[in-house]
Length: 348
Image (cartoon, rainbow, N blue to C red; front, side, top):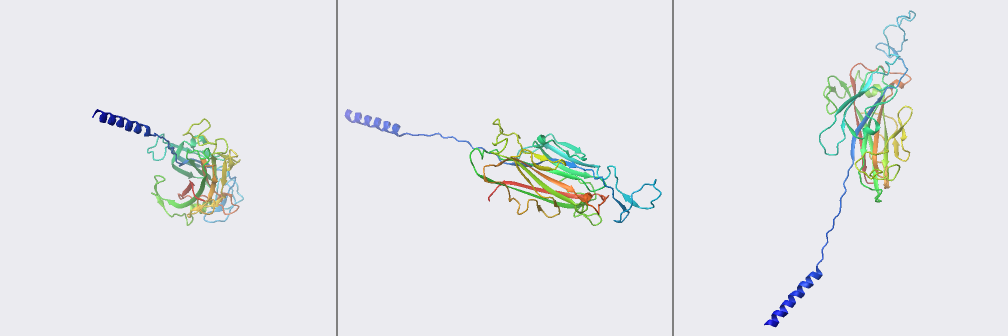
C-alpha cells in the first residue's frame, strides 16, 4: 500500500512539472492614433479700389449728359445725374463679421464671440490677420455696399486643417482631391434680415427694375488654393518642427500681388492653384472645371495636405466697363452668395 501511494505521489509531481513546462502567456499592447480634418470659414476682406470715373445720365435714361455745376452757365442740361468724382464712386463700403474661437468637431458652444467691421479703400481690409485667422471661425458675415458705382471687391477664406497622421513619415500613399463651387441667389430686401440662416425680409428670387444684383454689378468670382503639404517645404511632418501636435504652425499662405490678389504660394514649395474669373449665377459653378473633386492636391503620393486655405474672391466689374456703367440702385438689393469647398482623400 505504501508503495502504491509513493508511486501515485511521484506521478502527480510529474504531471505538475509537465504542466509548468508547457505553460505560455503573452501580454501585447498597441496604440491607435486618431485625427480627422476640420474645415471652417476663417477670414474675410474688402477692397474698394479708386475708380476715378464719373458717369452722368439723363434721369430715367441711359443717355449720357455733361457733368457741370450751377456755376457753369454755358451748359443747360437738366435732370443730369452724375456719380461723384471725389470718392463717392467707390467709398462707403464695409463688412460686418462675427467670429469666435475655433472649436473641434462636435464641440458645442462658442467662446470669445466678437463682432468687427471694416471699411476697405484702395487697400484690403481684413477681419483678422493671417496667423489669428487659423484660430477663429466666422459665424456671420455680410458685406454692405453703399458706393455710388458697382466696383467693390470682397472675399471669404475657408481654412482646412488636415489629419495629424504621419502619412509621409510612414510612407503611406494617398490621393487628396479638391473642389470649389460658387453660386448666387439674388434678392430684393424689403425688411430686416436677422442673419445668415434666415431669409426673412427678402424677396427671392428678387430683382430691381427687372435686373438682378449679380447682373447689375457684373459680379464675377475666382477661387485660389494654397496648401502646406507633408514632405515638402518648412513643415515636412504632420507635427510641427519641435515635435508638437495640435498647433496651427503652417506655411500655407498666399503670395499677394500689388493689388492684394493672390499670385502664388508665399512659400514656393507649397501647392498653389487658381481658377479663372467667371460670372456667377444661380447655378452651381465648378470653378476648376470638370466634375467637383477632380482637381488633385496629391495623387498617389505621400504629400498629404497639412493645412490648406481657399479664398473665394468676388468682384463687381460693372464700373470697369467702358460703356454702360450702372449707378448703384437705391432699392435695397443683393445676393446670397454660396461657396462649397471639398477636400478629401478619394479614389482616382
